Image (cartoon, rainbow, N blue to C red; front, side):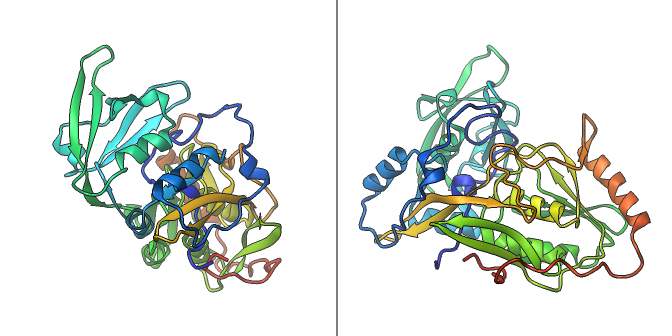
Length: 376
């Protein structure tokens, strides 16, 4: 499968905790796609309208249709948009979580914490957050989208027309909160992310891998990132079209370096796969709060016109056989109101003081044929 696996529309990166799909506690019944994976539609001669209709009628919560340029931009870390990240707590309003400096939204004076009231005339609360983000990014650079934004509760709604621009996603950010410690924040898994993580962790004596708000992405990049910290062995497994498949880390990862992984309710999909693997393998301590709970895998099919249709093909399990679907991954050390970053540093300090001087024991062998960093 030349396109590899992705975790569906989560590649619309930038939603904060609780931002995607139904809120926590939703009673939505599993869609038919969870039980009956769709056939591969590679090469199908569908018009964009037909593909969108198929997505809308599939009952697949994570189905998505992407133009050739949208798919290339999203997997490559670039996209056409307005520079807004959004957040919606259960039953709450749609809020602006972050504004990218220099973006169309920033130039229009939109600020984090404001309420996004409408998108192209439709009330934001009537739309799943995936659809809100899709509409904000729903056209090429130079196209326009109308938004209604309110500052204070009960204040006037500002009607703004934003012109989309090509923006570079900042998927990996690195800082050093303590001597020898690298905090590596990964916002989504696009092409090249694992190499950036490997470079950032190369000389560190301790690593905080910050996956908070990570919206998922390419399976191959998540597995390759796991390979930075594991010396081979299982990362995840899944059933697709009746076939059991294994995702396996490559050998040679840095196993002695103490590792803490920060997670929260915005940690989704490929990020949950990575966090669950490092937790199950005893390689990292997870700090923060329960992750989102999306354990399904999407297969992108390249249509005849070069566009991509993503449909759910199965669920994955961590090395210990857990599925995050609906339940998420629980942290080893809950933040419980504390500053998660400060707590992560304290946990890392404890790990560093108790780390053995000799290299860690070899990783557990894979339970299936190696898949390396490429998705099957």
